[in-house]
Amino acid sequence: MDEDWFEVEDDEVDDRQKAFVDRVRSYARNWPECLPQYTTVLVFEPGEEMDDDEIEEDKGELRLIVDVCDIIGKRVLLTLGAILVEGELLCSAVHNQTYWPEENPLVTTVKSSGDPEELGETAAAWFEEVLRRPVIGQISGPGRWSFVPPGSPLPKGYRWMRGGHLSQA
Image (cartoon, rainbow, N blue to C red; front, side, top):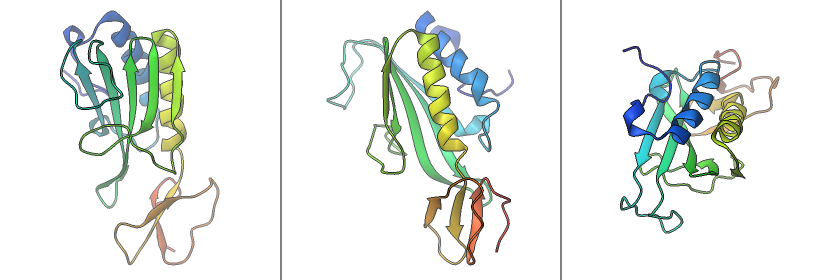
């Protein structure tokens, strides 16, 4: 089997979840600098024990996870999640290990409701908007990075981490 974005077995998801994943996957193939291995699917069965008070335990849940990566530096800069519970969607930055939603001033949280295809469109557009943002980082210091407006020049002492020309100033 070829590796694909959001790889999941059909018997792990219900029809609604499958329609959602299929819709998001159809867009993921065109996202910049997002390889299949940067995506993950988590499926929680109805009634499965979860450690988040905001998630209802009696409903099944699907989480699509995307790591926003610095390909050259080989590290994850930010982790994003689209969480589907029945007909409700939450798109948010998520913790890079637990995948629980968390506040991040760089990423707008989106909530929506609707059918799986509509929600898939919403999630795909949200992921793509974040993934298309150029990212710069200091050449001399690890860990510091920031989004910049598209078309911005590369400041001296910085390198492109995503988008841009991936070169140094």
